[in-house]
Amino acid sequence: MSPIRYQGRHRKPRASRTTSLIRGGVLSGVVGTVAVTGATTPASATEKPAETTGQLPVLDGALAHANRAAQATQAYAAEAETQDNWQRAQDRAEAQARQAAAERRAAAEEAERRAAEEAERRAQEAAQAEAEAQARAQAEARIETAAEPQTLAAAPEQPATGGDGSGSSGNSIVDFVRAQLGDAYSMGSTGPNAWDCSGLVQAAYAQAGISLPRVSGDQSVAGTQVSLDALQAGDILYWGSAGSAYHVAIYTGGGTFIGAQNPSTGVAEHSLDWDMPTGAVRVL
Image (cartoon, rainbow, N blue to C red; front, side, top):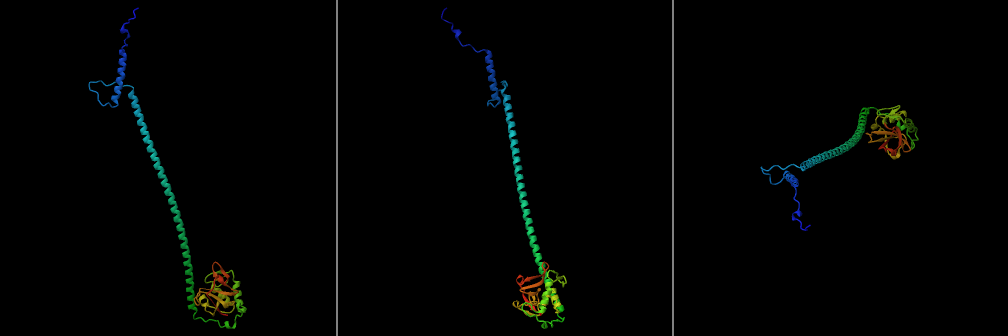
């Protein structure tokens, strides 16, 4: 056989028409996709629309999914912001409630403090008013008894000898007031189970046969003024000025006295240091 071969048998085979058509269809699909997504040169009126391929539904689905994701993200962000705003509002409300409670407690404490101060002030005013009323009553009593005779002539006949009350009259007066220890105090009372200060002193001297004025102011000038360093048992102690004293008691010797002090103590015995008197008067 001859080694010479026909050259035509060694040429590259030509592509078939079918392959060309397939390639053309793919190219048409790509061109169509580019046209849909925004090609810069619009198709002419005489050109036929590119064929739709499977890429457009996929792209539409991706865009729809992305849109839904964006909407979900926005909704989540809005909800998170709403919850954050709600939490901040709740925190503010709780802080305001705590502050209001603290202010109410402070106001209650302040009101209680003012009430206590007001009660103390009223108590002081009541005590002062009572003292003033007693002073006025004593002044009125002095005016009423100014014209009455004072039966003190018997006093010089019954001297109380001895610095601490060795005289019988002084001891009798001391024994009387000592027998009343524990009795109640009541303003205006003259016994037998309740006394005021001048009522007890008057009764003590009356049982010794000596008449005294009824009120403290008059009793403080009913005899001879004596020094507190030279007291004798039975001497009348007074608090306040002579002639306008607001309280009296009986000196019992040994640096002590007995008197109807006040509603809380009643008739009680105390040392002079417990409440030092202003002065003293000796009737015996």
